[in-house]
Length: 146
Image 1 (tube, rainbow, N blue to C red):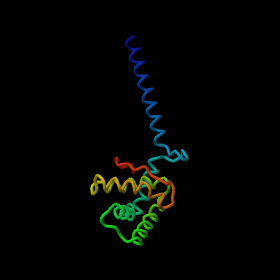
Image 2 (cartoon, one colour; image 1 turned 45 degrees about the horizontal axis):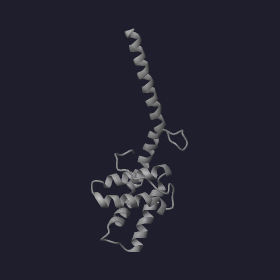
Image 3 (cartoon, rainbow, N blue to C red; image 1 turned 90 degrees about the horizontal axis):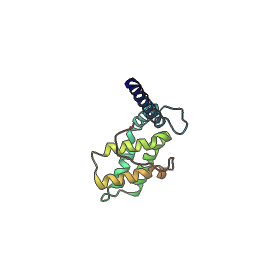
Image 4 (cartoon, rainbow, N blue to C red; image 1 turned 120 degrees about the vertical axis):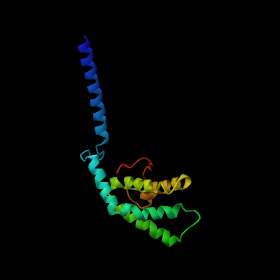
């Protein structure tokens, strides 16, 4: 009887592990086409982000926009936004939000509180300002995904 109980408990544990593994697999699958492995996408995004100098033009633009006391000339602001948009357009669609989030994570040590919140709001709407998809990105300040 004890062996049967142990065997039943072991089978139940395996079923639970199998269910958790199946759920994790769903999370790691690319939702759009279901064929690409998420880890490969992450490596591709990391490489794209490196090629775009970690969106350094977007970092400058966001700092410029969030500095209330130091307003720059309109032409300089427009030019900075255009440079940022060029960098964002060079990232594949599925890497843009991850790239913006990574850029913000890099700024986290330098900015806090209200300044960081302002940068997050501006970054969230950057794709719309650049007329690219996705139109908006959800900004997260958790550990890096790419």
